[in-house]
Length: 125
Image: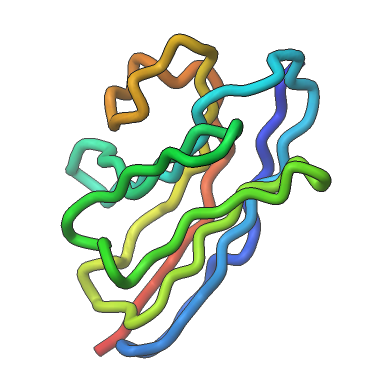
């Protein structure tokens, strides 16, 4: 059974940084899509950044491009999201997700089979 466990959320002032981690276990596919999504109360879950675990490919939401970096340590089966220059509008619950291939490396929620429990990020002005 696939399990995704996020950590690293917290509270930070605008302009600060946080790094989220997502430890994955139980995955049998060699390569798959993984990504970060976020959600605020009353709004739909939106994509932040995704990558292909086989390397080379990643995709970012325009709102975070240049500030956030998605990466993965395959040896540790851990996905990261380095968030710099945080803004109050980045405040949300952040979720890690994984999707079986084929996946389009986009933000279609239907392509992601597994989800973590979420970690809260709060950015104050």
